[in-house]
Image 1 (tube, rainbow, N blue to C red):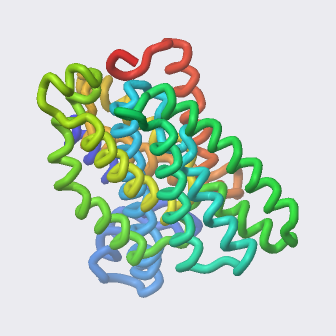
Image 2: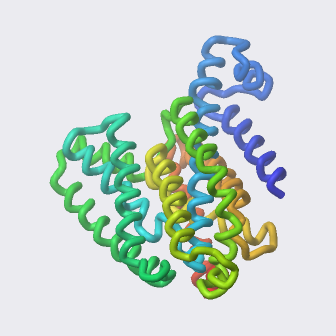
Length: 322
């Protein structure tokens, strides 16, 4: 199933490379990808369309794996980074820099990364006693998300129109204009965390069954919970710093992945592949837009994720025994 999804993603990347204001055919895309053909075609394929699709898949993978870790730890399908406030913390950091310094290709992503980590630290600290309480994690996250959202609104209300536009463009979630440097950043982050996440998969599966089961299996509850939360937060922060707070993409992947493999386990790799595929498809839809108006990818993922969120709520079931 994972190979099928990767193949689907490659087909979507090919379609995204063909479609656009500068129409190409498959042969031109294939030649342009290796630097053969008209200079404009080579530029469009190599510098605009391929890196954008690669960023979409990488960011989707980061969000999907992060969401799977949080949902498994909390044993609840609602515990994704954008719902428990981590993405909002990243947004607060980015908007604060835009408000005080202005739009910066370096400082805004750095502030978003830092904002996500600080917010995650607060959420974890307030939900942690002897171990992380799933219900406290969600409630504290939602409360902090509401608070930071209100503060962002106050900051935006005091900005001049130019900086408001910059802030709203970032808050919408977009990968327009992303290049190979962004691809290298998100790919490097995924590779760096791949081994510790693989090592943490078994403890995560045990923790998903509850603290008592974890202790009886010899898994250090608190230490592994904190370690996995840190890894998931770094992944989420990396994704947000590249693409902005893309709505519900971290929420979408894990429940679909668990359905596909027929298991309630963490399904980290499959969740990442599913979210990456959804992200590439969403970006293609966003580029097509409505008429000639292209949309930020975050709007499309929000529209796609809302029905899934309602479906999860109506089913009334989380992950594990949450």
